[in-house]
Each structure stands twice: as structure tokens, then as C-alpha cells.
Length: 318
Image 1 (cartoon, rainbow, N blue to C red):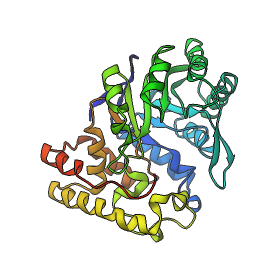
Image 2: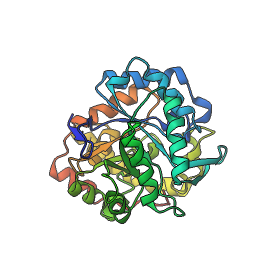
Image 3: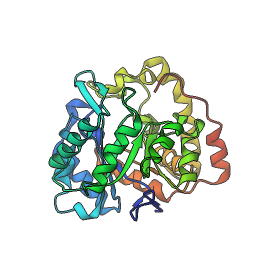
Image 4: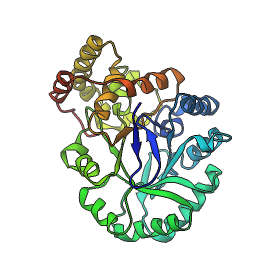
């Protein structure tokens, strides 16, 4: 599996990482198993996965505690990434607000360090830019924490090219994390992926499997767990799922010809968008983890990439 440079830092990470959100937040509220999730993270490390991604929002806070537990005795084996700047107002509805004030971010970093049980976070990401706070102020506060040694590198999440440039003028941007998949291509259309490649910034794609839809295992809302945040997403409503099934059907046909799974083709397509592009698919099972990791070795031929580029747009907001 190829390795990706973390911006201008000396750190690299394997192109397939693991996103831990779904272990504590957003998906399958009744089916969570902390012990199994800890085992999944540890198994990921055994398989060579070294980018482990979480956020203080997830839970809130409980996912960082879980990740901290999973990394006991394995801390030096990973590039530990977390995020701050989204504050949960109502866990039941996932409603959150943005807070990019310097004083808030400093306190959030200290709290994350405590929950994770570490004295340094390798990659800290501003989860969203706060429209009420100039990005330069938020970024400047995080840059100070890099100088203090609490943070190794800093990144942004779900930002525009203009916002990346403004942050770069203050301190180097090591990474940008945004959604990118075969049914969510905004980061390609708005030039963020290209810009990151040109500027030596790692691009970390979250939800490369379309929040599970591009695994090929969801054909109706009934295939989702009973209590699951995806029931609120327009793209997972009955009519949208039915319409979007055409996307999965065409990926499956290609996967069958390549001797791969639907999920592996979907992940491999994201990785094919640039040598600086990595993915953090989420999973709570060792079986699907192994499937995801194998995607890091799948090279799609030009005709497959052309076929995937011609897939229809997804129906419904993401």
C-alpha cells in the first residue's frame, strides 16, 4: 500500500486509514460494542493501518475515550488524528454548532489530550470553519499549539480553496479532510483535491463508501439499523435509495469483472484521484476492515476509471 506525506511534516501514513466515528456516533446506536471496536482498531494497526481518525464531536467525547483505550500500548504505531470546532447541542438529533474561537479551541485541544491519554496529537483538524470567526484567528490559535508541542501538525475539514489559502498564509496546512466518493464528488468539482496536490497537502477522504451505501449492502431503508442517523439523510430516503441503486449496480458489475468487491472498487477509485489522497473508511467489524485494507492494493485500469467517471449523479443531498 502506498504511503502519503502529511504536508510538509516528516510524517507519512498508509493510504487506507480507519475512521472511528461510527463506533460511537451517527450509526447503529443499538449495535455498538466498545470491546469489539477496540479490537477492530488494534487489528487495523496489525494490518498496517496507521492513520486513526476521531473527533471530540463523536459521542460527544466518547469516541476519543474509545480510541484512547484502543491505543494503549500501541501509541507509537499510529498517526493519531482528531478534530475540534463542532460543539454538540443535542446528541439525539446530532445538532451541532461551530465554534472557532481561539480560547475555545485551546480548551478543546487540552480536553482531547486528556480523553485520548496522550501528551501530543499528531494531526489536529479544525472540524469546520466558524463563519463568525475569521479562519486566520482559529488557525493562528492552533499554530500556537503546534509551537507549544501539543500538536504535531494541523489540518482543515470541509473547506474551500480560498479558506485553505487564507490558513496557509498563517501556518502550513498539513491536510484537508472532506467527503469524497463515487456519489459525492464536490471536492473534485470545486478544485480542492487538485489544489491540495499542487500545494503538497494531504487530502483525507471521509465516507469513501458513501456512509455504507457504496458497500452494496443497502438497498432499502430497512437494511439500515432501526436506530441510525442515516434515516435522517435525504440520500437514504426510499425514493433516493431506489434511484441510487443504479450506481451500485454498475460498480458491482465492474467489481465482478475485476474479481473485487463493490467496496474495494469504490475505495480504489477515491485513491486513484491522486498520490496525495488517502481514505478513512469506517467499520465496526474485522471482516469489513480487512476488505477495506485490501482496496489499498487494487489498481483500477484506465477503462475502469473511465467507466466509473461516467456514473450518474446521486439523487438526494448528502
